Length: 388
Image (cartoon, rainbow, N blue to C red; front, side, top):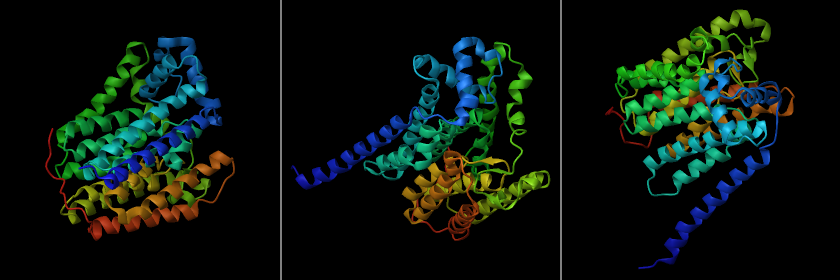
């Protein structure tokens, strides 16, 4: 029997989702031609090099990124050859914004099937201020590796371990910052949710991605040491990033740099130990919460972090709110701190980020206590069985 009220209730969310989706597209369209100093110094020259050399670009080291990003730039240049260089760069980021939204949709749909909740979660990804600034304003690439991390979460929740590790390997082949999720992956390995034998997928995938460049003549040692060479750049403890190093001046770099790695290792081990020994049931809410903590703890205590490096944590914070609504403060707090980290770049004016560093530390402590020490969530579905 036809029920008008029920039909209207179903239609309204769909129209709202559609309207919000067009707003997200509109924002990106309005920002498409915006250029930044990073574009003039880096990406503009990279696209020009590809335009000039075509496929032969593969033999040269004209970027400081991994081959994965070079391939994406070449594909985008081919598809949008008649467009400006900035649009060619941003179309890559816009595409992976959509992939991030897709995986967030799929993860939320595991908890709320046949409802509008997954759609609103996906729209939240596209309208997140830091996402708009990252891809729309800046043309940065953080959505690319983050989509791989979200893919890892989705497939691991679905107990498809091989695909989960493959998605992580793609993220690692794109950006070193994917290692922020490693403490969480170690937890899954210890609990035997992810089989140890699948670790080989990560180096194997990276090797496969560098083969085309090696065939074209780029030295193998150069391709294998890209991440090592990246670590030598930007000798600063923090590049406008609200983390632990906001209280240490740049003059302490030589002393604090090695101490920072030791501190991160110590906190990471504590996090893994606490998670393994104190959590009996790894339900999906706690599962996502631990992934979030891993993505916040690592950049918070590691030195040399850039302003954009809470990007994957912002995305997983959206998931956490949908799985455990009581943690909505996490999304608000992380969103604020992460957004403020962009302000110095956007406005070209330095601001004091210590307050926001304290805010993030508070989020870490409260979430750590709530998920691990207290270990009380409204979810009850256990994540334990594994499947290749």
